[in-house]
Length: 213
Image (cartoon, rainbow, N blue to C red; front, side):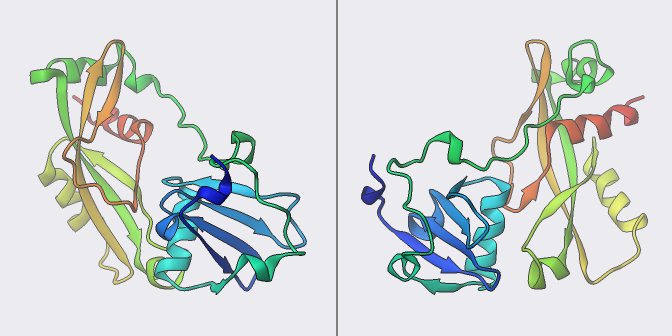
């Protein structure tokens, strides 16, 4: 569809002359970005990507940008792409997740998953959050720290292996490893995952594999 048919684009400008256009209500479709005097053309960050999340938090949570209109920007920015969503050549996407042999058929972890009922192994993922960054920095990011096969081990790791720190918070998430065909996949159905949680199949498998007897 033509870009003019988008319900709305909310425009913001940061102190570093970054122009952000949030497509749809609070950017739920994606966000355009353009650096004045630095960019050659618009870029588009699809909703759900890490870079989209960064800008979404920066504007709507932390208020680190000033509202503006597209009329105010005319003469400083190029025309928007004629199509929406814009062609993939405009897209800024997250790097592809790397593979790991620990998720493949024949690995010790794959055999373990195949041995449990329904071939569905519960895993408790520990995420670490820098609360200072959440409040004053780039936003809330709960990144992978470790993974365990039972909740008590995950809780003990957090309680015993770290010194108390008011600026560091830990979160535990239950997910499942599932054997499908010749590899493992993540099953997060009914998991209480927040939009700020970041972890991957590779990270989980590579951390869990050495812990299997």
